Amino acid sequence: MDDDAPCLPPGFDRQAEFPIVDRWTFLNHAGVAPISARAAAAIGQFAREARDDAYLTGHWYRRLEDTRRLCARLINAAPEEVAFVKNTSEGLAFVANGLTWQPGRRIVSTRVEYPSNVYPWMDVAARCGVEHVMLPESDGRIDAAAVAASLNDRTALVALSHVEYASGFRHDLATIGAECRRRGILFCVDGIQSCGATSVDVRAMNIDFLSADGHKWLLGPEGAGFFFCRRELLGALHPEIGWMNVINATDFGHYDFTLRPDARRFECGSHNIPGVLALGASLALLLEVGIDTVSRRILALTRRLCRGLEEKGYRVISSRRPGEESGIVSFVSRRHGHEPLVKELEKKKIIIVVREDRLRASPHFYNTTEDIDHLLDALPRDA
Image 1 (cartoon, rainbow, N blue to C red):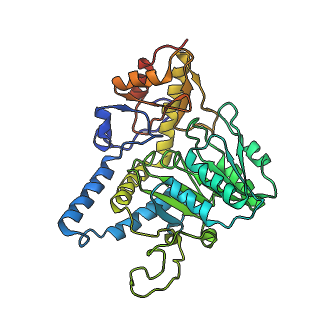
Image 2: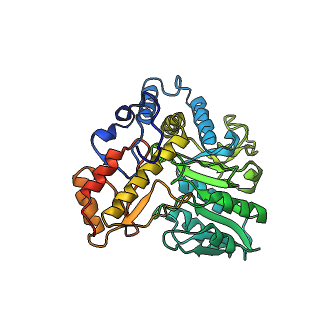
Image 3: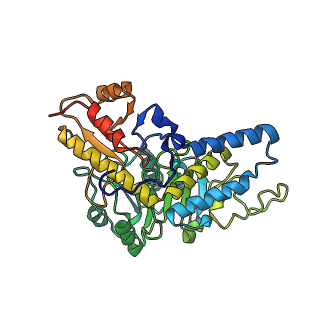
């Protein structure tokens, strides 16, 4: 692979780990990605255990804690700061619904967020008299300086996606997070388009809250993700209440409404055990390969793709500036309808999508230069 991308670990078998490569050139990991073979095996193991022995032999909850530790390791958090969630939306809703909002305060986000990072803040604005400020995109970018300039003494929270779903723009979270921390502003991040594809460090980035589902770059199933809450803010969010939030959850007849001291206070009921175990299996694979290796391979593939698209006359929307590029490449055709193009590519077993009137391709680390060239060869010239 070009651009000095690292090789995969010795013995890595992409056909065995990702059998989809034998059927499809799959380039939509920013949508719903294929689960890894290890994730599928974890689901199968759970199914066999549940079928043959119910809960008696699987030691599922011990294994759930293994996954919690892997989630924490992925983002440089402590396991005590990580809760399991059904999806990204649930974690963001924990913040929107759990904080105490004062009328007249401000929430800053952008006009190009995925709806899960828009509607909760709209709801807060409607219910609590909070102003919701949505910053515009300019040429596929939202500059960190523009975010900083939008902050004032009334700003209570900044809510951003690490990587924007339609453009692939990667925010400078370290700069934005440092400014938020300096001003005493909470920083909430939708990490679904970055976790598993690039380095995420909640400490270095001064992130207070982060939520991510597993079905995109983390290569897990839908309905199993994680939520990070900085230790110092655990008590600032009022959780949804169920039977599992409390310290003596399994002492069923002894009602002690004392919330757990760690992030498990946000887990109000029974877990999606097969989903979390499958997520853990894919996390283990990604960490085994190494997130630096994963990220460098993804960026090498997307750079190759962008060069090829421009040579064929397409306009690349995604910022390719250092620090702003990601695994998402959004581009437009001046001559061809986007939806017909996607349908023709699918007939050739190549999967990309349309988002916000843009074509979008998103390769993962196990894709190859041949996959990228297959897409480029299949696209008609646009000049």
